[in-house]
Image (tube, rainbow, N blue to C red; front, side, top):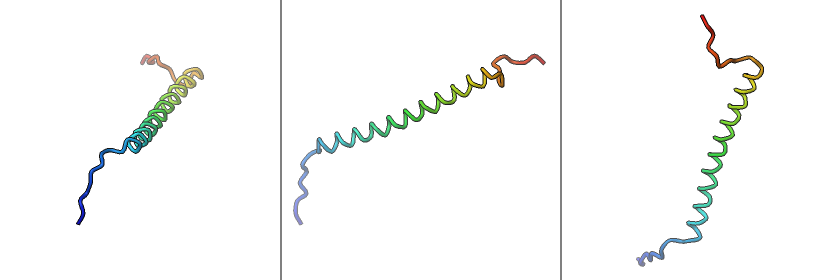
Length: 59
């Protein structure tokens, strides 16, 4: 059996993995942002149409 030689971390491999993880996390953040933006736009569209109100009705 031969020795297992530890050569240290591969800088290029770690940079590529870091960029990949950053892009995936950025994609999820952007999707979250687009979802919030869509919900806000829908809310204001309904508010402009008069279908909803932010004022509570008197009973």
